Length: 209
Length: 118
Image (tube, rainbow over all chains, first blue to last red):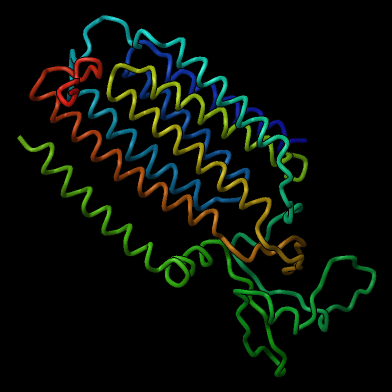
């Protein structure tokens, strides 16, 4: 119930701010609405259990890209004059956006998404997995895998614990993201750093006097 | 968390994307168009993370006292981080071009930028 209220507040904030971005008269006000919209999306990430991504969103979008956009607004004074802010075919844009929203909304509403994660996601920070040999209270309905099942789960770290029994450590989300970058997505990760370097150099070359 | 259906997030993403498209096709100011593109990229990220959160492979586990699901992949979040990095690169280049155009023409009105028109 509480999460539903939080969702509605955040979604409303995001969409109202996005509407402000595309309709406000002055471009400076639009940039400020954009910051609010980014913050709303960061809140939705938190609600989705992606805390690290929310932090990245605040750092990069709210902290860097918005400031960059504000810089560009400030460095281009009187660029537009006081004439109309939108082009003469804005009504076509409205129709196109509405039709697009209708199609995407219908597609997503009717989509048969295979839901696999319905409960709480754990752990955000990692912890020691409880396996069946350690469970003493049989009344508990909590799912406990056997040691063999735990070994088959990807990403689990097995350690020798006290008394020779294995301990299974579940990685936290940030650990998993770091591993994904350094193992599965190593090549894209290196390429994206190259892209960022090229963008940096390119921006300096293009904007230089 | 369980009481929010997945499609709520997807529809917020669709709305954000449509608003971004509206901004891109109607704004006359080049900076406004870039803002629309940022909104669209945010919508894509929101969809990726929402779909990851609800449809990633998962095992029911118990860690200490807490009971829940161990999601074994973070692909959606990794995808979103790549998109954020590309968005940063795109914003940098776009704004550098806007400033360069402003220097030479004193205007960033997209309707007057027709030098490449045949």
